[in-house]
Image 1 (cartoon, rainbow, N blue to C red):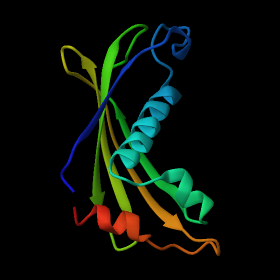
Image 2 (cartoon, rainbow, N blue to C red; image 1 turned 60 degrees about the vertical axis):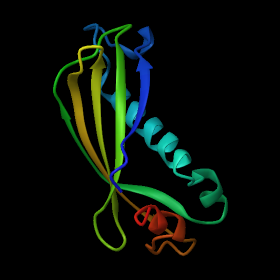
Image 3 (cartoon, helix red, strand yellow; image 1 turned 120 degrees about the horizontal axis):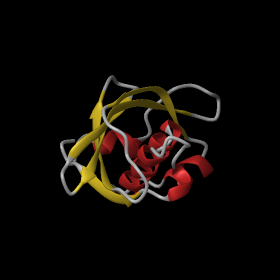
Image 4 (spheres, one colour; image 1 turned 135 degrees about the horizontal axis):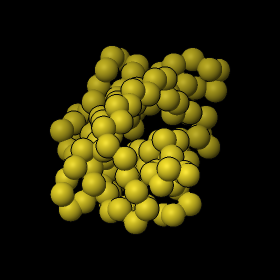
Length: 132
């Protein structure tokens, strides 16, 4: 799956800390929102899977902070899906400031899914995303 999905944002004042930069926890919100939008874009309904007893879960988050965003900065978050193992998948994500494309964050989020019994498995919707 080499498709790169992109979503643009603007920093809101309340996302910044006393130092005038985006609080580190907010970067995870940007990344998560982009992942959910990406899943919807490729036809995977996160809420429907949960209703059916399939929970998509994060196993690991790796984030490299490279430069801070400030209030009113425009930025882009990208997302690409990759296969890690038969039961794990990864989202490779980057945040860049616009319009200069300054690298802000590089991240890799590793996830899996579990069924109602709490056992890992890969639902057909996710497995098919790797064959597209």
